[in-house]
Length: 165
Image (tube, rainbow, N blue to C red):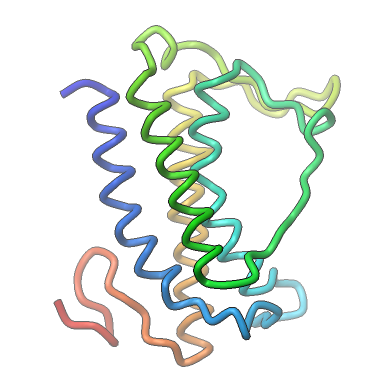
């Protein structure tokens, strides 16, 4: 199995579980936070839908400069918009992975802000950290938000307390 095949298979497998979570986000609760220091439900869900864009960014360039691309947080207004953001980013990520050469996966990807360098990682490592693990981390947070709002939590890798497989 090639690295592309493995990464695409994992992405699509995990995307199905992620969609199950995102489908349950009630837009009327977009501003809800479990704690004053927490991000809102709508922002967290939208961030999860945006995370696959990092796959495309990592593959498309050798660096990302936060100074040149300031963060602009957004919140999907509806569940349909949330799912569309996720699907658009997912489709682009899968296409980027499919077109990537083995040599590209070994190139170094740099994360910086102006002259300050935060990370320099092989792209294949950056994909695991900045995209895949990032998605799983926030999806776990989202499951706690759902539980606290008494919204049934779907099973991710087996049954959940709310959903038998």
